[in-house]
Length: 175
Image 1 (cartoon, rainbow, N blue to C red):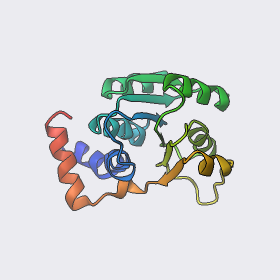
Image 2: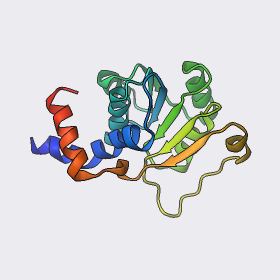
Image 3: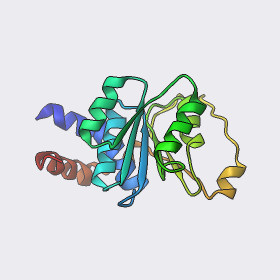
């Protein structure tokens, strides 16, 4: 279907690739996805394919949480105007913070939310495209002291000649 092919060539390659190729989410890991547009929902699907143990979908729109739950997210978290409260709720849902937090919006505030939600050893995966002049602010010391990481993921490291057929086969298999 051309509509599915178009999605594979854009948001699926970006989001699924971020989970499977950039972050290489291991089975059983806890994952949070901030922002549930096409790319964020594709991050959810990638986490499902990686067999993540817990997948928390985070957004400000309740209907998007429902869609994410239908795609395999285990929990939905309605983001609030208070990023500290949202981060605390995310940490509570994931026993101290998710192993991987995918930021799929591209706003400095949501990048900071992703970073602020990390536990010891956690990884923030920045998938959303921020404007070139965007600036986020975070403390550096907790990354060294807590062995935390920030990964950038541009287009999910897609190799179209390899990944697009793979994603098409997964779609045809109902996955």
